[in-house]
Image (cartoon, helix red, strand yellow):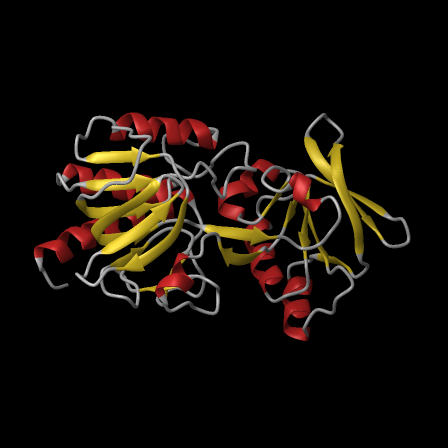
Length: 316
């Protein structure tokens, strides 16, 4: 059910903060075990710039808003799940062991707290890039690489990740070019690119803008200092990640070097009773956070099951 009001004195079983894939799946899992759960949804999502989600079984190519609408229709069937469309601003532990979340509409309390608020992408400062991100510029080869198939693809930057991205994209792109943007590649990175036959352009990228390729396919054109232009079918970029919400800092949670909340395999954070799932969470078993819709849903389901077991007093 959906409730637009708050100021709720009830001690719920769990609060889920964040209405993206991780939070929605967590609410469903808790609802299916008849847990009293409140989902707080601000209406702002990391994939807002994206025209479609990909690599999601049954929803490949679906606009993100349609995926969320389908999830809300599913949640409406569970009486113990309440969706509240409001923005949360503060989370704190209570003396009784529970938690309180303060929102635009008031306060809500629960015995357990799940953070699924995602991250914010800080893009390279390349002029024009923000207007293209989520369409012909993307960060994940698994989520967007196929859409660039058969076209020349650029990889922006000179950090070590460019060699890995080149390896992932070489079977997809017709040609790869690393745009080092005025920076120097480390010798091992350059050697790996040379071994794959990847072209490297060292000049600074002064602008990227939307472009229609021969044949009518959407793409972009990258302009380098000196005026050279490169038509591309897609551009892979590596954003810097920041927490999209202040709750990790407010609760004093451990954060990894990636900028994401440290969790164990069950979604537990460094503060007992607080769990995290989705793009904002990072388990030490992986060298980087897993940023995809399916990974977020899986993490949300696992964290919800962990919350259920924690409420039962079951150790894992």
